[in-house]
Length: 254
Image (cartoon, rainbow, N blue to C red; front, side, top):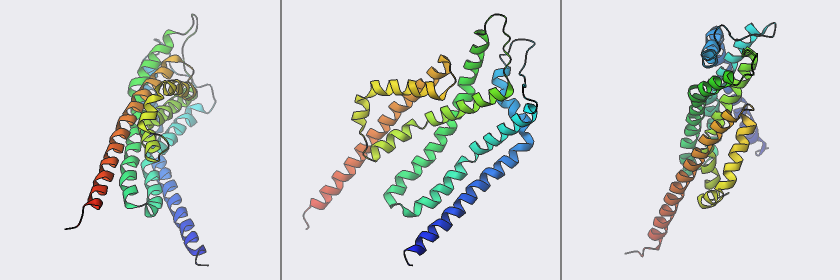
C-alpha cells in the first residue's frame, strides 16, 4: 500500500500538469482566434509580395476562407504555448533530478525553446522570401502562379516545424555527448555521414524543392558544428572538475 501511494501521487501530479499545459494552449488559442484574419495575412505576406501582377491567392475549398485562418491561429497558439507546456513538464520531472542534473537541464531547456523560435524566425524572414520569390519564376509558360490558401498554410507550418526542429541540433549533440552515447571526436570523425544525413532530413522535412532542402541542410550543418564545439567545452570542463576533485582527495592531511 505504501508503494502504491507515491505512484498515485505521481499520477495526480501528472494529471494536474497536463491540465495546466492544455489550459495554456487553449488560452493562447482563444486570445489569437479573434485576430485569425490578420495573422493569416501576416503569414501570407512573403508569398503575396512576389506574386505576379494582377494575381493573388485562391481558396479552392468552400469553407477555406473561414477555416484556414482559424487553423493558422490554432497552430500559432500551440507554437507560442510551447514554453508553458515545457515548464509544466519541467515542474513534473525536476523533483526527481539531482542538483547537478538540474544545473545542466535548466539551461538546455531554455536554450531549446530559444533555438526553436529562432528556427521559426529564420524560416519566416530568410527562407520564405527566397523560396516564394523563386517559385513563381519557375512556373511553366502559360501557368499562372496562384497558391491555394490551405496548401500554403500546410507548407508554411511544415517549414516552421522543420526549421524549428533543425535548430535543436546543438542541443541534441550536447545531450548525446553528456549521456555517453558518443564523443565530440567521434562526431567530428563521422562528419561525412552527418552531411548525408542532414541533406536526407532536409529532403524529408521540407517541400520537394532543392532550394528549401538546401537552405535547411546548411544551417543544420553549422548548428551541428556548434554542438560539437560546445560539447567539447563541456567535456573539457567536466574533466577539469574531476581532476581537481581527485587532486583534493589525494592531498595528504596536515
